Structures are given as structure tokens and as C-alpha cells.
Length: 83
Figure 1 (tube, rainbow, N blue to C red):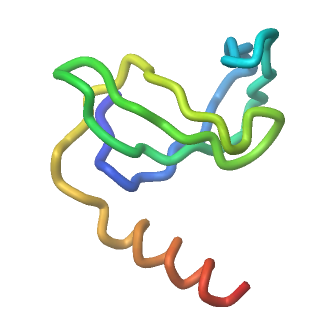
Figure 2: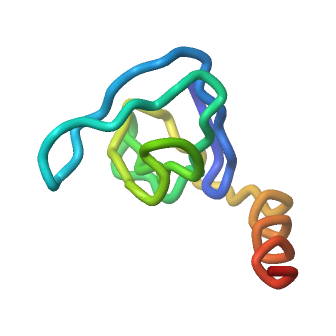
Figure 3: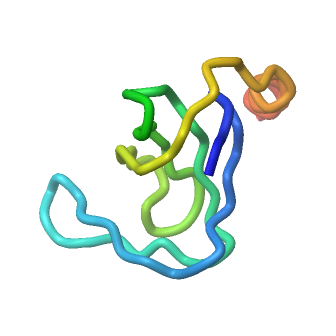
């Protein structure tokens, strides 16, 4: 999968992730995450936005386009300003 920095991705299947504090968090179908940065050619960092894993970040196998998804970032800024 290829994604842009700032892009919101939606998970299509349930899976568990390990968390630093120990244990696991369940990521459910439909949970969302935002692409934060490119680590290398085949790895990117994401931040979980919804579900049990919300607020946690993880390195995942993801080809990250170095271009920024301006629309997604602008939308996020506007959402935060309206809170």
C-alpha cells in the first residue's frame, strides 16, 4: 500500500498490536489512523485515531510518498479549531 504523509487510512480487518506498556490493543475493522512520517522505503509511522489503540503510534509496512496530503492536514486543523 502507498500513502501520503497526513493521509487517513481505514483498516479493513481486525488485528492486535503490541503496546509499550505491555499487553495488546485491538484494532477493529473501520478504525482509522493517520500517516505521520516515512521511516524508510518500506516503513512508515502511523498514529491510531480511533478505537482501543487511539493515541498510539506504530511503525508499519507502508510505502510512504514524501508528498504531503494537504487536504487531510487542512481538514484536521479545521476540526481541531472547531473544538
